[in-house]
Image (cartoon, rainbow, N blue to C red):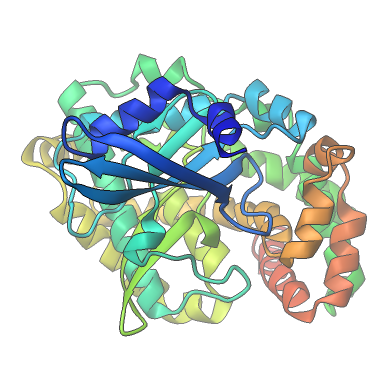
Length: 411
């Protein structure tokens, strides 16, 4: 049974390649085991596994711990959706760039390198054995968690900025060819219109402020969602990097010392885009922190991000940014411009990822309804869950009411 599982996931050639990359020459595989990475739904665009390889290395035995993401085999509509939108191909390109970036911090990494990356498979070291873990999705990040993840995000963006400076390309053609400049997934709004409908129905059902909202709120929200995502396009003559664009809690792994976060690693680059970095920072804040936190600490967070980002730039990139007039004031202007995207991203993502695990499994991993719930009207199960789960309901109301106040009522 184990042999069949391995053959279905990794070929003999791939297994030998992993061993050659991660052990001493001449090492041999003695055995292995494979199991699901989680009993619950761990992500929406792949199947996640953990593999332990037992290897004889010289005169001793050691284990190689791997985290594997594959196109799912049991859910055909999900697999077809993933392959049609080339999510694995995009993430593989990011890992290719990581391999080309030489000056990564090995002590406090902001990412992990993949051992194998293809359009169907990602294999990387399992960071759980190093003590990394996710923060509960339903609980807001506190100041300590925000500080370490913002540091990692700033270093990620700086590494891409340095990389593009070295390549001397302001709009790299190899990225354009691989869907970094357009999202077919979002292009004709197959996801955004249903997401706007969820926001509208949550507000209509649960908001105490609904009497203040205009009668055409649903149409206004649909237009706002599309315009916000459209802001990612055609940002010329400004700093652009590869942004993560999917910074919800499960895509951030934290390492702790005495229960205090000391580092954060960003994972899962399937939705990455080439865009100004402020879009990442604002979506991170709206998807992981409370409105109270943002009101009290946003200015401090922006300052911290910019300091780490600036310290991580090489001299050639600093010169390029000076020519672009990209300083702290310009960065803050971009953050304000990207705020609506952060709010829309939170309203689009949180209703799905903040469900409790069992409800999310029922709603988003059924082959018969997968595409319908991902790109069609999913309001009924999400609104019903909001009625049953107070914490979930309040989380959605906070970002939906703020979006309407700021960009519909403009108060």
